[in-house]
Length: 267
Image 1: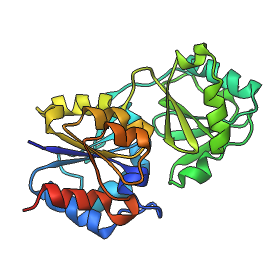
Image 2: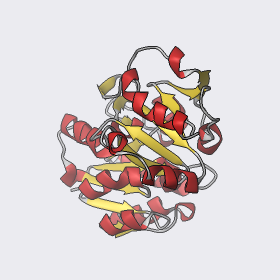
Image 3: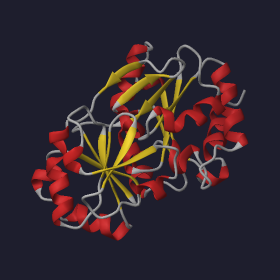
């Protein structure tokens, strides 16, 4: 029995204008009122997705959000952290040196802000993400030694494709590397995924993956789509995601989430 709906944001729940359509909002709100947990699963911090949380009315005592691609599970109404897993400053030494040697950009995120590394070529992350995150210009050597969530490499698709194809083993063995969007590549703790965060939340709420329906479109949605009882790929999803999904719905610009939910929850 489905008791939780997990939703990726970009190119899944959000349309091309970075908005949740009225149809998606009303459909999810109706299911939420019937007692089904609605959980946003994103690479962003909670403050960057808070307008969507409020729009959907996900502010009750047992409403949670998965942020940082599984790295943080947070209760919405008081923003209490249920679980957090990240990286140390030293963990970024490898990818920072690679970016420096190969004229590539890099942004580093703690659990609140984005640090635009000024000692590297300029990143496009701020423009591509188009989200109300706080961006702080910073030289890598001046970063504080504290917990961080991940690193981001934002560049043209071909540049990222080439970088990934040529990463040495010391890079690929040190990070979980995923594309959250065609122009965004993320460097996460090993074994980190949205499914990791969802597993923690499901257990906390007395559920398991047999109770989960998940929607996604990109590589960073792979594990949760694969683990869910009902894993739904958007019509605009990558072929890789469609191949492991149990179902495929229509495009994110055609209310794909709501269309599928209407079929599953006919009453």
